[in-house]
Length: 110
View (cartoon, one colour):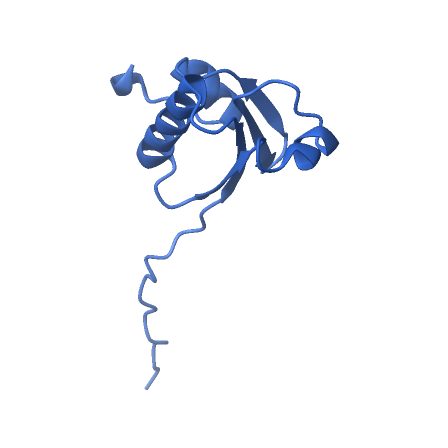
């Protein structure tokens, strides 16, 4: 009598690449507020389970911004996965942001 090995249950867990982002802003400046809102919407839609976002206010951390070469705000840096990318502005050009993040936009959402 031969025994079959037990079937493994599909774990349902998928490997998710976490996108690490850093957004440099200036307090409550209109472009900074808009950049935060735009980025949160993009992350909610395209990276619901796979992102980590750090928001750095250059008014509170000017030395950090200078050390990291940030000259213009708002400024988004994609730190990982590589390649790294930067986008400057209020992030309203969604296609540009998605391209920088390495996200292919589905044809149905265009």
